[in-house]
Image (cartoon, rainbow, N blue to C red):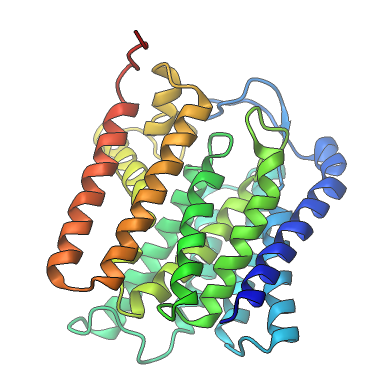
Length: 337
């Protein structure tokens, strides 16, 4: 993969996304206002639906790169894009009218199932498991990943602070041949699109992604990470989204143990606790961004210094770093002296 393709794919996605946001924002302001609720970190109605621009820019940029550069002919891309579009439709309906939990989950499962069902027969991560069990785990894990990206999109710039470092790392790995061309292009385009969206979501945000953005971003990002794992880099694929995985999963388990209704809006995530513990929004997303850059460095080390010892050490260090940030967020911030 040459540098011109990398620059072009990311830049085109960035420009398309920014233009679409400018064009769509008046319409979203009129018809898609997110009003403050129990989960919100904002206090005034704010337009949502910016994810339409992010997803459209990502897909168009990849298609243009594939057409003009002949970069990829992977039919799986069409499947992944179809799943992303389906999830965008589910998210758009939920943003505008609120979809009941069961049909929402069923449609999300269909979208993830489309991706899982079209994986090659020789696509295996744990060869000792029967194929049908592994595919069932892929479905459950994919459904959880799509939803956790949605759950974690509850603060200005939070998704930007997560997606930009992760996709930039994936693109870097692809540039050096550690990730197939298809997911590398998706990562490049998604990174560029999120950069194009970032100025509009900067605290205090003038525009939110909405479910129309967070759900398809979840399936696109999850597919890229799955491809990285299948390329022999399972530890790296776990390290890159480790903060999101830890915050969302621990929060879910805590709420289940308390007997809370887990699909009801809440402010129990560690990053949400942080804003109530004296952290500003910029401090929270800044720490998450720095943590994700560090996790990306650990992921790179696990790939290029590949050995069971290095993989174990990088995963342990990554877990420790995430635990430190979660612990900081869950306690009142000490004032500077």
